[in-house]
Length: 359
View 1 (tube, rainbow, N blue to C red):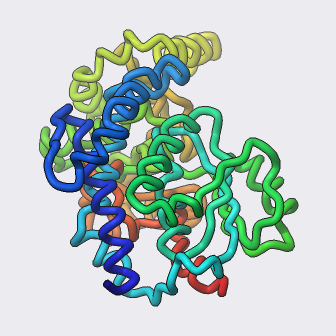
View 2: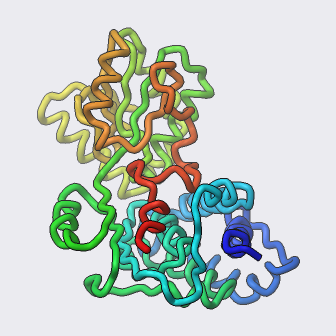
């Protein structure tokens, strides 16, 4: 079996294992039987208890993340992803040690970086976020069972990263400045804070607006692909959106999210700032791209060209654009921000290309 074939076999098996949890359907057949015997119970318990350690990681959101990863790990998807690259043998011990500073804003957000290092034959030295270390270590354990030699190339540390040949670090804009300095003499990818934006035409269907709500509310809006800014036509009735958003009223029962909404509601009221409020989301007119949790900013436009220019000027702050407008040929449909494929690289930087060029 060629190198890509072996990698695809390992990760498709992982994907098959993870795909059991979103719907709670255990499949004890073929190679999954032995994997389930060792990991199914402990993985399921970790999934259900994660919210006790990190209240933002609800069971539903963890299952949502696992569903997205399992789709990413389908055989045809992996083949399409890996086909352009020349992959070297990965179990000879000749790969580099790649330090990973993993984010923890949404469940298993660092998985793609770990997978990218492994498929390029390198060794993972990961500093996991305290917000997400339990789940990512569970997944690493499953990989180790599927392929012990690959699993042996994954190591976690709670200390500062040392002794690595390259670094991929994800954090806030402030931490990125520190990373840039600290790793200045090491080949690196440094990711800053980014968010999703949506540009509406005013002709969206109720289904498309409902899908847009998923782009806003999934993971409580904490992901870099969540929509935090809307551009709407000058005469667009924002109350249409607020009505659609009502179906997420259950978020008011999540104390951390509800506290965020209440905090910014109080701030805006004290400062006599105009905003729309449906109880679970505040819509505020603002030129910024990134909004607080529980708030979405918006701007009205007359000419679409002004929006194109603004997004180009702020491209370093934008992870993805949700739009059906012809002015955005790379725009993605509403409802798809949280289903990236392996080739949808964070910040638009080809991680695998970077890693293959380390040799």
